[in-house]
Image 1: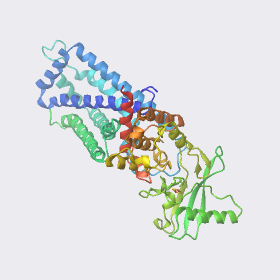
Image 2: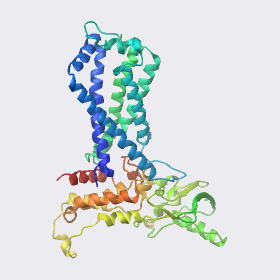
Image 3: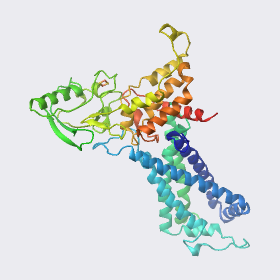
Image 4: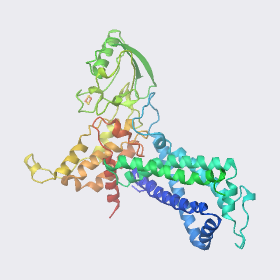
Length: 222
Length: 246
Ligand code: FES
C-alpha cells in the first residue's frame, strides 16, 4: 500500500509537514521579534529577505505546498476517523486525551483562516491601505515598522492575532509531542516529558507572537 | 445496595437500539459486575422478558470477552480491570450506571451488549504469527533471548484482544492492539524475520476492517485492562519506517 494511503504512512506525512511548519513558525517568530529592536532593525530584516529575490519565492512555494499537504491529509484522516465511529455511545468519558487533541481539525482550520487573513494584512497588503507607507529610499518598499505598529493600533486586528495565536497554542500543544511518537522516538519514559514540553512550546509560541500586537497596542512599543 | 441501570438494548445487528432502565435491588458489594447482571437477567427471565445479552467467558480477566462500556469508559475505567473483575464495591448505593456495547464501525453489535470482535482476529490472521518452525518445547530454549527483549515481548503479549483500545479511541483506531503484536514479534528472533511483511499486512487489514487512524490521543493505554503501553505504537511506527527502507 502506498504511503499516501496507509494509516501510519499518512501519520508520518502529517508529522514531517508538521515539523516543517513548526520550524517555519519558530524562525518567523525570531524575525518578527526584531520589531522590538526598532524601525531600523525590522526594516533591515525585511530588506534582507527582499534582496534574496527568487530564493524567497521558492521558499514560499515550498511552505505553501507543505501547508497544503498538512491540511489536505489532516482533513482526509479526520473524515475517516469520524466514519470509523458512526454511532457513538450515549455516555462518553475520556480518561486521558484532552480538548487540544480532540479539536485538532478545528484549531487547524481556524489557523488556515488566520493565515489567509495574516497574508492579506501584512504580505499582500490589501486590508488596511492607510498603514502601507513607502520607506524613504527603499525603491517602493513599504515601511514594515510603520505597517506593524500602525496595524496593531486597531483593537480588532489585535484581537484576531491574539485569538489566532491561542489556536496555535492548542494545535502545537498536542502536535509537538505527537510528532515524536509518530516518528517512533518516544518511549514510556520520554512520552510524559514530551507531553509537557509540547505544552511549553505552545506557550512560548503564544507568548512570543501575542507579545507583538499586545505591546504595540498598549503603547509600550512605538 | 440498590442501583439503577441504563442498558443499551438492541434486538439484532440491523435493529435500532436504545437505552432502557432496570432496577437492581439486591446487589451485594462482593459481586462482580457480571454477577450483578446475571441476577438482573434472572429477574427478567422470570418476568418472561428477554434477558440482556452480554459476552463473557473466563470471568477472571484473561480472555477479553467481557466487552462493556460502563459509564462512558470501556471496562468501567478502573485501572487494569476487565468488566468481569470489576466489583460492585466500587459503586455506591443509589448509583445510576450506564452500560453500553463497544461502538465502532469495525465492531458491529450482534445483540444488546454483545459485539462481533472478529475484526481483531482478521488483523492477527493478516500477520500476527510466525511462519517458521519453532520446534518442540525444549527447542524454545535453544535460541537465547536477552532478558530485555523477553520482558518487552512479554509486556506486549499481555494483550487479551478485548477491543477496549479501539472502543475507547475517539477515532476507533485499533493501533494499540495491532502494535502490541507487531512489537512483540519484532523483538524476538523467530518473529523478526517477517517483521516487514507483518507490519504492513496487519496495518492494511486494520484499515480494511474499518478502524480509524491513530492520532496519539493515548486514550487506549488508559482504558486497557492490561495496561498495554503506547510505546508499542511508537515501536510499530519504527517498524513501519524500517519496512519502507530498502
Ligand atoms: S470474561 Fe474473560 S476477561 Fe472478562
